[in-house]
Amino acid sequence: MALFFNKKKPVAPAATVVQELPLSAIVPNRFQPRKVFSSAAIAELAATIKDHGLLQPIVVREYAPKQYEIIAGERRFRAMQSLEFEKAPAIVQTMTDAESASMALVENLQREGLSPIEEARAYVELMKLNNLTQQGLAAQMGKSQSFVANKLRLLKLSEPVQTAILNGELSERHGRELLRCDDYQQQLLLHDILANNLTVAETHAAIEALLNPEPVVTPEPEVMPEPAAAPEAADKQPKKRKMIKSKDTRMAVNTLKKSVAMIKQSGVKAKVTQEDTPEAYRFIVELPKEKR
Picture (cartoon, rainbow, N blue to C red):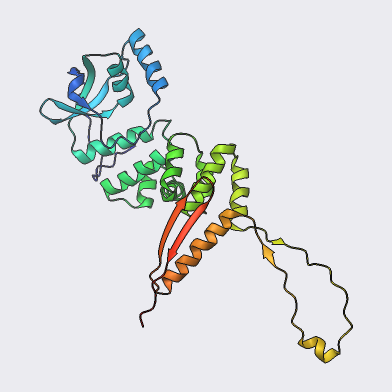
């Protein structure tokens, strides 16, 4: 795969001479897309390195005199840190900031284990670094444009939902379902999903119930029949309407928020204070009085 260096061909790698570098002189790549590292996986890797040695050196670049930034191999670097190695076998390559960032991103995207959010954020960084469109990125990555677009849409999720996906508490399919909701609804549903271990299908049903609640029709009280009215009078009598009620608190809260939004859109400067207590949602709406 060609790397995204804004050149017609990828940069040729430097001579693969392995050097022993002080571990203290090496820092992680700031564009490392992987934000969550499993301590158990690092411990397992450290045990393997302790028993068999480091089979593959890390790749770094010298960003300042005698100071090195990791391009590939942060998990190995962390494992060596846990083993308190003083030096690390490394291959030093010459790269610019943009080249180093692009290579680190691509190297990690080619490996398994990135969360969907980490993958989406890596795509955003690659597009910024190399001035690529979604279509251009998809072509470089060997993916369809719809695949890239669907990943990027996950970044529209609220921060709590993104964090849950990052931590492996929520699947990508759950996230796609939650894209239909606003941030507040997402937080309500996230709590429900995690507390009750909802499947994707159950999450879909919960979202449908929240966005399109079925009206609860209260039965009309029985009344004694009245004498038939004349045809003309009967036409003039207003028809009785069935009252629709809903006991869904979340629907009521959402309706209240939409009402306040409509007030603001009308030009009235409304101030809203919201407080969530264990027992209730509390809203205080302040409207300015007209000056006379």
